[in-house]
Length: 69
Image (cartoon, rainbow, N blue to C red; front, side, top):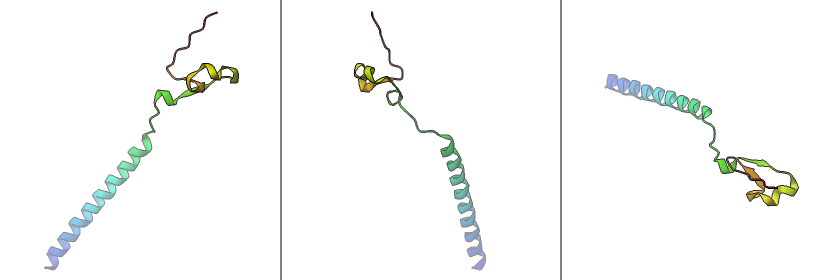
């Protein structure tokens, strides 16, 4: 009976070690991943007098600006 208990304990310890290894690897992956920012969230500020001319008061990444005059 003691042998069976020791074997079960060994398996349980192996599973915990595997779980700890997986958690450590996931932490490494998580550290490498950066938050995603959508293009509409990336803006460049414009000078005060120009703010009313731009949607959201800034120049959005990927946006086009046309000038006539």
